[in-house]
Amino acid sequence: MTDTPESVNLSDVSSRKVDTELLNELRDLFARAEDQKERYDFTWNGKAKAYFEAATPTTKTLRPQPEESYIYADDDYKEKVNTFNDSENLFITGDNLEALKLLQESYLGKIDMIYIDPPYNTGKDFVYHDNFKSTQKDTDVAEGSVDEDGNRLVKNEKNSGRYHSDWLNMMYPRLKLARNLLSDSGVIFVSIDDNEQANLKLLMDEVFGEDNFVADVTRIAKRTSDKGTHFRPTKDHIIVYGKYISFLPEFGIAKLVKEADYKFTDGNGKKYKKSGASLFQPSLDSRPNQRYYIEAPDGSLIIPPGNVFPEKKVDGSKIKPESNSDKVWRWSVDSYIKQKEKLIFTKGSSTNPLLDENGNQSKWNIYPKVYFEDDLAGKLHPEDVIYDFPNSKGTKEILQLNIPFSFAKPSELIKYLGTLFDSKDRIVLDFFAGSGTTADAVMQLNKEDGGNRKFIVATLDEPVPEDSEARKAGYQTIDQISRERIRRAAKKLGDTSGFRALKVDKTGLKEDVFKTAGELTQENLQLDVDNQEDARSDYDLLYDVLVDGALEYNRQIATETINNEPIIKYDYLGELSGVIAYFGDNLTNELTREIAKLKPLIAVFKESTFNKSSDKVNVLEQFRVISPETKVKVI
Image: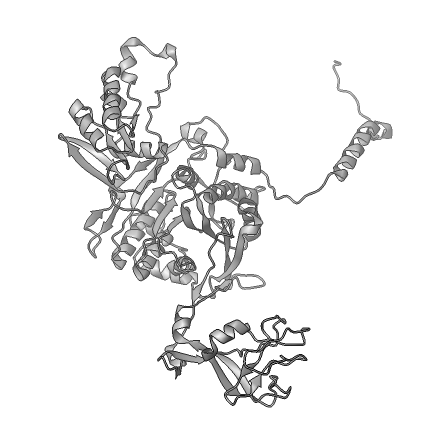
């Protein structure tokens, strides 16, 4: 190496000539690529990482919060009734990605309806940030539970080079996990506005499949804003997909009927009116069984216009149309024979197209009767535009509960979506729960139709702004607002179902439980028998078992005593059902036998309960004799 840098003459063309060898390699590469079959693909920066994020197992568990699981028994919101043991509704606090992972095995294919209202990515709102750098600054940052400043939510500025990618990376793993939870006949509704509507549609095509697309529903969200530049913004969207559209039931809404409009009464006392559409519709294509004679009150025969006529001039005599010039009735001849009494004959006008048996203009028109009771029970497919539930209604209803929260969706919107199918015994999931609107809507629906729907809602314990009305009212985090809204809405409705509060948390294992052989000493060996943190309650230990065993989290809990020792019964309905747990330290032979006699599916004990391995063998032997089908677990 010389002491001076090499001199480069920029005016020397030969020093800048194209590398012909490299050019030939590139030409061959492009030629091969051209020969390959091209296909459409939706991709973005970080997609692969987001995909693996969905597939990565969680390292978290669910910690019960019995102290938060209550409803109110008085109008002053002071008298509390705890609902933790009995409620089938779940309120989960924590990162919804971890919550969805914790629901995967226990609720796989069991969710009937999902509604979410994720961040719209307006450039002003916040999104969950999943692309954390491993700085080893502290444990939380390394785990990706917070960013380097301690924030789980980050502002997604529009001037960011990853503006759309960050939002897609946040949504992709959550939607993939949500799809797993849906039942085969389940449906998901996702609210969004124009900022990400196009990307969301493509993303859901990929996750749920284009064939399972149901609708892009336009919702009129507001009418008073004039903030747009060329058009006033009034709408947002609800993107709808089924898990499998072939299993998704038809949607239907009740017809709007007024009994006063049904002015006629038949011989059976049933009220009816004349249909707005006649039995003859010119736009119908010709069909073999729908061109026939109908006998009028005066004995003449009536048939739609055409060139061919039945040979027999009698009521119900049919002929096969020869072309679309031979018009037909809306009913087949078999339907007509069965329900002749449902027709109304009226005098035709001078332009009446119907013919008689001689090919002349008939003096009759024919209309079906429309019965009041049929219309009352009938359903229509909903329109793909929703006019009736603007955001102002959501703001008004949450203010009526004296809850300080902005931009809440109206509960009537989610109620409307929940009534598009007939089932009243569904599990509804919302993992962007916000102020708890979905839970409120579920309770309202159950109140109105006597249903037994259950909700599972999840929201982050995001701090509310320091200068917000919520902070002034004493609320520190969004999940506090959401739980309080549910409690007050329940009191207003007289709903006593309550909810079971759970929190996404680190596992209850001691941080130093994993040791190498060299780290263990004889004198400290006994201290490492129990791998659970001392602060874990019996309910904490129970939920560790439920998470590990992929058992549902909302079954009934009962606490009892046997031989003056506390036991927990979870979803125990009798022999060979549920879990029975004993987490005390006084496991006697008699207590073991009494638990074994109950014959639960699963019996759980703590490792530290056993002084020596022979004690554990003794317990297993007693269960083998008394209840051999019980699975015994030691944690």
